[in-house]
Length: 52
Image (cartoon, rainbow, N blue to C red; front, side, top):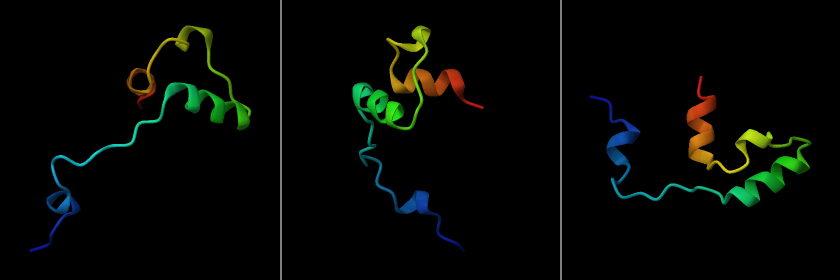
């Protein structure tokens, strides 16, 4: 029987979420810019909008 990594991960593990201002700044260094319509949204909202 194979063990999966899901079994080894604790249920209360913290998930890293960057601040939106830091995300925007790092995107600018990459040459990317945010659309005006996405200016006030959180990273989670943007992930839901652009999920494939």
